[in-house]
Image (tube, rainbow, N blue to C red; front, side, top):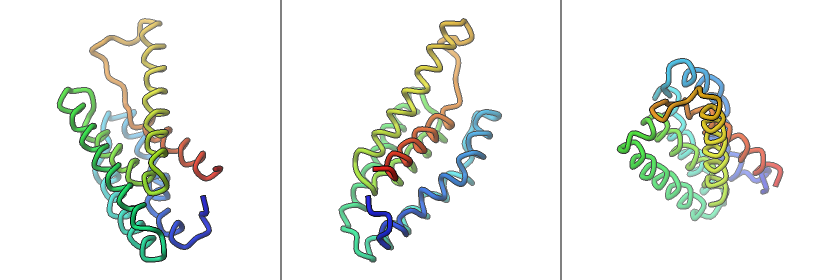
Length: 160
C-alpha cells in the first residue's frame, strides 16, 4: 500500500482518530460495558471527510464506495445481532466505523479485523467457560476485541 500518496494520507484521518480513542474506549467498555457515542460517532465524519478528500486528490472513487458499502453491511449485520440481543448498539456503531476505516484500503481489511476480533473473543469465552467463570447468560465487553482486531489489521495493512 502506498501510504505516501496524498490521497491515502488524508484518508488516514479516520484510522488515526480511531487509534487515538482506542484505549479510552476499551477502558470504558471494560468498566461500564458501553461504548460512548461521544467517542465513536465523531469517527464517522472524520473518516468520510478524509476519504472524500482522498478521492479529490486522486484515488479512485471506488475506494470510497467499497468503504461505505462495508460500513453499511457492518451496521446491517450488527443491527441484526443487536435485535437478537447478541451485540450492544455501541458494538454495532464501532463495527461500522471499523469497516468504514479499513474498507477504503481494500475489501479484505474489514473482514480480517472482524475475524481477529471475534476469534479472540471466542477464545476468551471458551477459556472462561472451561474454568467455570462464564455462563451462557454472561456478557463480555466486545469493544477491546474489536479494537484489537482493528489494530492488528491496521498493522498488517501498513506492513503489506
